[in-house]
View (cartoon, rainbow, N blue to C red):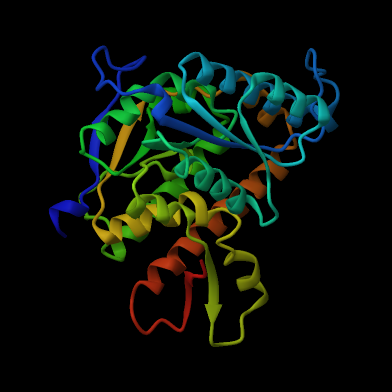
Length: 320
């Protein structure tokens, strides 16, 4: 394995470095998507299970956006069927807001990447789930390897203590197992060195340099192809457009091309309201749903890894 393919490990401090590599905050694009058709203004009604998820996630999204604005970061928000009151809140915040085009979860994220990457003055692009408020506090640490040339892409890594303390237990267990599967898979295919520390890809956020050879990886679309009769199971688990196209396959493609991917550890704390909702929901249904999502991510990424080897009869390949 060449030196250029090693994922470098950086460490963040408890609230950002005291002397981070300085960068113009406007040059960092924060990209997120929102979908809260049942959001309403005012206090949370914890007894209304039907609207609880949209309400708490929407509140967290507005907090994250406000915090990012306080740091003067550039915001690109893809609005997918949010309620009229929520959309009005976004309008009042005077951010760059775009109606989501049809195409699925990855397509919405990639729409945001395209808008951000095509904007003059944007040097770095960060994908963040809207409820991950605390991540905004660590942006100087996360961007530093990009400003110094040590990395082309940064994959934030949750510190163990905060991960265990602030997430639901079943989510900690499932994401740790999925991370292990994903990283071992890349090592098996020779994409990651055997001695590499795990990339916390299931955390979600990714940050990359806004240069063509990197930005194109985050905008490319993939589809599963086969020259044998696909099984019903294949139709369910090989859907790169659901999750993998936007934030998982690009990491594999970057490592395969020899681009530099860094892991930066931060003491990220998950919002208490989010954890409360996830714990109070139908836990069994939540566990089943999460494992279904994680299984699909690992399977589609494994399929893409196989496609990098010649002679694969069933593979994921780019369509755009």
